[in-house]
Length: 296
Image 1 (tube, rainbow, N blue to C red):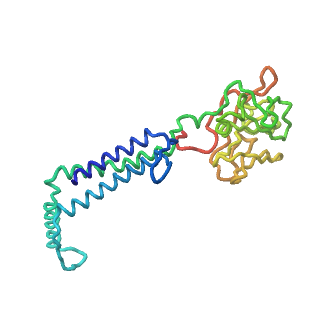
Image 2: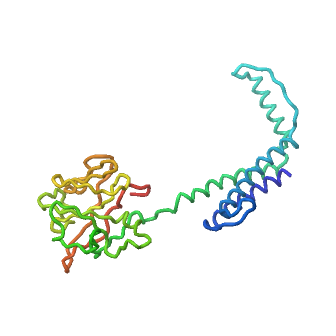
Image 3: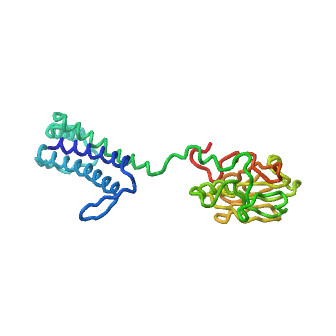
């Protein structure tokens, strides 16, 4: 009976994993008297409950029916055990192990070990709910070579003359539409802010090389926790994140000059195409937004 309970626990754990992998999240079933409930939640709860119950029931049944129930009385003794006491404890342990049948009853012992070894797998499988591995999608955005910069307010391609010195303009890649199902996910990485500086005010050489007529394009996503940046100081060329006050200098490579942000704002390399519109020359050179676990 004890071995049967441990085997049943092992089967229930396997059933838990199989239910988690195979049952769709949106499938519902009718269970009296609960009514219509999630098939996945019902299966997970039932199989995990059976697995844990059978381990407990098997251990209790083993202790009540197969182990000795003789009570031993022992006098209290100092905390530091004497050699005689240590020898007595070891002898009692050996006697208890022998009487429990732990050494002789290999089937019970092995099935118990099997049940105890499989139950933690239920928790390991649940780690899947942390989400799929990001792969390289955190490193890439919707920007690519040849995509024009689209003004998010007018939804029209931007020309250099549309951007005045000291102004702040928000842009997105050509081809993105707000009705697209993945628009929010993509704009969260591709959102762009554009300012026009006088070339002599640009301190960073790479920033100047990646600009077009003094127009520079930086990621709008703060490198602290990913808030959208929207506050621009015209005189200092600083942009301020409204969430935690991280401040970036857009005249010096977007570097951090104040606040908890860990690294500079990524810059997008742009140019003026043959038709007179601003376009990207590729994707960002580094991942946008806050640092993540696989960023290297």
